[in-house]
Image (cartoon, rainbow, N blue to C red; front, side, top):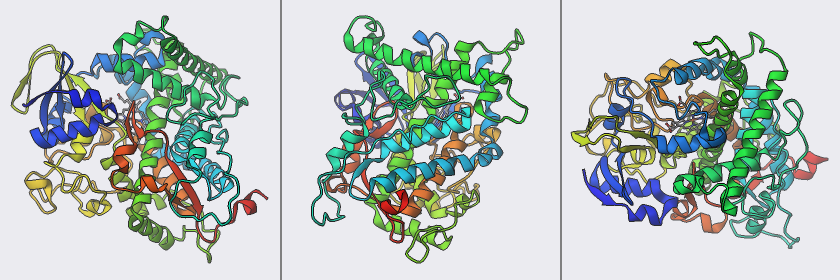
Amino acid sequence: MGLLGCTEMMMDQDHISQIFTQFANQLGGIFFVRVLHVPMVIVADPALWQAALAPGTDLPKAPTVYGTIDQMTSPGGRHPNLLGHGSHSGYWRLVRKGVAPAFSPRNIRAEFPHVLELTEQLSEVLYRAGPQLYLDLDNLLQRESLDVIARIGFAQDFGAIKAYRPPQPPPPQPQQPLQPGTAGVAAAVAGSGGGAPPGRQRGSGRGGGDSTSGIGGGGGAIDANIFAVMQGAGAEVVARLSNPLRFLLRHITADARRGERDLRDMQGRMRLLLAGIQARGPPADTDTSIAAHLLRLRDPSTGKPLDDERLAAEIGLFFFAGFETTGHTMSWTLFLLAQHPEAEAKVCAELDALGLLVTPSRPHPRRLEYKDLSRLRYLGMVVKEAMRLVPVSGGTMRVSPDKPLVLGGHTIPAGVEILLAVHGLMNCEHYWHRPSEFLPERWEEPQAEYWLGGSSSKPGAAHGACASGAEGFEMLEDEEALAAGLDATRPPKRFLPFAAGLRNCIGQNLAKMNAHATLAVLLSRFSFQLPAELMGPGALWDLHANRLTMQPKDGLPMRCIPRPGSRSDEGRSA
Ligand code: HEM
């Protein structure tokens, strides 16, 4: 195992994931770094991921990281949420098993109409803004994901999409060309965040371009400003993760005090949301929402419902784990498609063949149906390739147990943090052919999700008989998802954007359904154009910011150009 004193990482925090991948290219799939005095093992090797996450091993979660994330969802992190609990804990099992049915393929399928409705709201914002303005698509797509979770999970209308305020149009100029350029970019970035670049805007009720009108149904203070509040709370957690002393300063320095206020504000809103849900009375037997499943949980030792602080912490987690991740995943997909017009043309051809694309001869295509999602195979490959190339999660941070651990022939002392690095797993040259290229066609190979051994795992290598797993849009029951990537009779998986094993993503069915449906609708109506400076090969690196999730640094400015045949903005709003 090579050793690196990791100054690169300290100097360039926006690219930590990629820097680890570069190390993995040089040193192999497991190596050791020291950040200041703290040792950490980084794992990118698919077989070692499998070993670390196998049910018999399932390494404990690292308390430093998840304890800080707990501070986001409960005051001082006093009520650790699902994400931070150990897999051995009865509490984790209770909540995971209790809430997993909310995400079953059947339930998620039943919620498809809600996603379509919110996608209509989103389209309306884009049509109204018109083709000249650069909108911050990342901001909008996060709002959409937030509204989807609120609606599907908690029967609540957050109104975050509707609260988006587009930038003021630039002064009229004769015949402004619809070519990639820079006009309106600054306005877009300013406008989407109420005066501050969206990537930098913070919460604390500071507008953020939101309307502050109350949204009914769950307690008066759940208003559309919740998006800005959540962004502020997320930013504070990032600040605490980079500087553990910040927690101690939370009542002392102005900045840390503001961050603490953001967290309290967000936690207060989650308690209000809970109060609103409880006020509706006990959930009906037919209610399959996340809220209903949380309210039905009973503490096995007392037979009583979970106390309100715990419930509010879990509600907060579902929002945090779900809205940024899904929003950025869609943003990176649109970014990569805009950079690769040949791939966008293939997506359009597929939409056209299914009668879903807006064209001059078909200005009103049929409505997207749930069954179309699995028919849109090329779009599925595009989303997968975007998730591989720019995974939004850093991975899962574990710790070696209280005795030395042997992993890949290396002995790791007790208590050392181990990052199972998602970017490394899915981008390391040892396990992928041309990993830094955007090649949706790689997913045509039915075994592409698996590491088959040999040089760069080119198609046709060993283990020819493993299952396909190459579907673009695929829903899994929780039991299947928990087993995915850990079946010892199959080669290890090298595509695990939702992690693997007991602690994989419980929300992945919802994330996939939302992302595939939203992208299909948007791409059937609009083409998306980047400013010229984001079209070059280095743009992905320049744009990438390693925060709580991997996101476009200061938002994603894009022109949304209605496809020929669409009604004009004036036509729609008339
Ligand atoms: C593209 C979108 C998403 C990605 C890439 C993603 C990825 C992940 C990953 C990698 C983990 C493991 C994290 C760790 O161990 O530190 C995770 C866990 C989790 N995710 Fe997601 N996620 C997404 C969307 C969602 C959504 C929509 C929800 C719910 C609304 C959600 C809820 C959760 C929860 C509650 C956990 C903790 C599960 C447990 O510990 O048992 N995620 N996710």
